[in-house]
Amino acid sequence: MLMPTIINFAPNGMIPTKDLTPHVPISVSEVVEDVLAAYQCGITMTHIHARDQQTGVPTYDAEIYGQMIEGIRRYAPDLIICVSLSGRNFPEFEKRAAPLQLDGHLKPDMGSLTLGSMNFPRQASVNTPDMVKKLAAEMMHRGIAPELEAFDAGMVNYAHYLQRQQLVAPPFYFNLLLGNVASAQAELLHAGMMIQDLPENSVWSLAGIGDKQLAMNSLACAMNGGVRTGLEDNIHYDKARSRLATNLELVQRVHALSELNGREVMTPSALRSRLGLEPGFGRYGRTYPKVD
Image 1 (tube, one colour):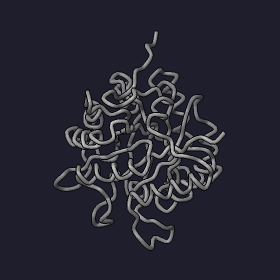
Image 2 (image 1 turned 30 degrees about the vertical axis):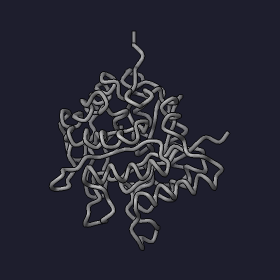
Image 3 (image 1 turned 180 degrees about the horizontal axis):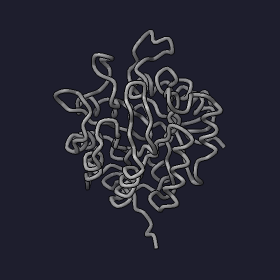
């Protein structure tokens, strides 16, 4: 049975700068504008990073996250919003967990939870076991669902461990990110092994890093899975890197791939129901069952 395609839109990340591409959204208004353009085209959820409004460098500032969330929800009250809790720049728990303290109409539905440490080409992302467990526990306490990020099969296995420790609970949403030089490669067998090992009651999206984005987007559409796309993962439109992409172009390309595979795009409300999230329109996050 063909499932609608989850489109997880990642517009900016931590790495792209205006020097690399003028199309990356940095300011609050730019992020809101790009997310709303993608929403009008058709996306299921968005994964956002905050940047310092003066320097453009990544920040954990909950106020900036709140401004972005408020701007998005003014026009897209049902869109699932995930805030980044990345460990590339901030080793302190209090900083990484800062966006989770937002509440009311600013409360994020999800927070990213990278399930282990790894090396990128120029930088390490450090996610100690203690940090991963503390962030998972904080999300459960705050009623926020984890967006489980796995860069290799070992990280998928760590999700099983967190479930046994009652720090995460199904249904699960996984981003499987392939193509980093020190992690799982953007190949069918690597993707298939990770998907096969996912816990029961999981939904997943594939992301391809850099010039692997199109291949992984195409594979996910063919395999009845979800897709993560956006300038966070790749700033070029083509594998030859002959021209820079816009966020809207990358979303439109996933629509075309889904249509070629006979699939529609999943609505935010459908994924909210699938993941046990609140319905939006003023109610956000997730209610966890009580554990005896």
